[in-house]
Length: 260
Image: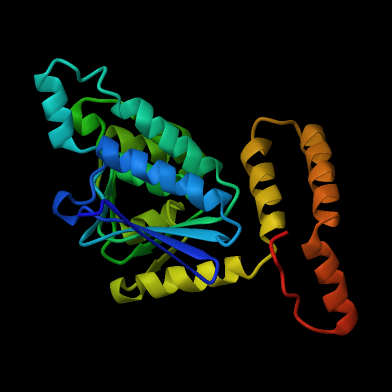
């Protein structure tokens, strides 16, 4: 069975984790395949936005515990390479210049939750459940949760989710800002598709500059951020999309952005 499904249509790349019998758990081959696919979509000018989802009843169960147990049996748990491969994937997904949407169905646990946290937008089906899963196994976070969660939901809520290893439903996740939208299960793909269409039709070069500003701004002073905004604004002003926006205003029509 193909571990990932992918299709591109009208600027939208849909990536589906396709290990439903394993609740879309992330073994090393899946991590590498997803990393390779992200690289391909980032380089493809036909792709303007990415939507990530899971096949079956789970978004992603996190690390593949069968692979983990096999590595432990060989005495290779600390060296078999899962953590390094997962870190490369999380870094790549978080660093993509194109907008990313996680359409979360069912459970998102451990690194599966972290995968969603790396995306720009998170839409949860009503059945979605979120669980850190680390301290319940006597581990600390190892795929980015300790970085993302305090920024998204604040330190105290992050500690509650991580320390107590609570299972949060979609409405709880929405109330604290872990996700941006909740919808009926049968509406999940359509809801994600509608957001993706809006993003794909937009000035994606400007989105990329804005995404970088937001990502890097946390480590800058306001004065430094204003300098960065000025530099990004100059790049946007020289883009084809900026020229198209001015033409559209003069011609009293909606702009047709190319992402360049």
